[in-house]
Image (cartoon, rainbow, N blue to C red):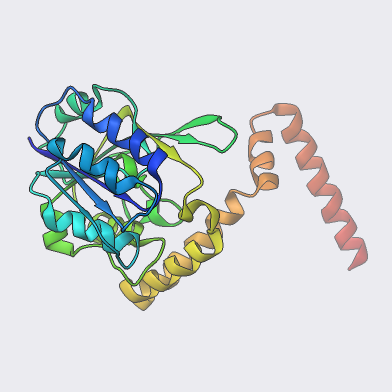
Length: 275
């Protein structure tokens, strides 16, 4: 099973070295490595050239943004599955592809765990939805972690490449359409896939991300589905409110349940008197 790994880079030489080293050290042999550089001027091009004997394809030229660069990589890829590992991110160990390859072949998208790396050096494992039974519901406020997802190349033929009119959420849109609306077979494996630099665009521009998501939803969902989506989102926000969660947890305590009952009775009595 050939795996194509696509790395996009622009003026991030240190991050690029870390990313490329993690790929080139993999024990899995059938890897097609593609580098799409946006015309860097920081020495990235020279470094790529020094490693070109280990690359299936590389280019260093200006592009129209990250999704345009990813689409260039998709156009060159010939592997059955594609992994997008941007400069600054790196695979979690030399045997990651060996381990993951045993689970490929019977699904459209396979994803594992992402290790988030913060500016202060701390790390946190994010397992995403942690499920193979994904529906539209899972994309209300979440998504699959893109850098830890192996995507069957044929899906890009079925649903198109990444939408270059979007700046932040085109990968989320692709998952929404292929999984949420078209039920692509998904598989989850409890395995750390890569380290992810949390200083990226999608993590610091939450407002822009949400605005783009709403544009996509209005364009891709029917009016009825979009209205239901909006209602469910409001319900989810209410249920996830810390005060509501505290109240729900208190229901498991006999004492707290009795106090809640008395509290509601007192409120009821006061309201009746006021009325």
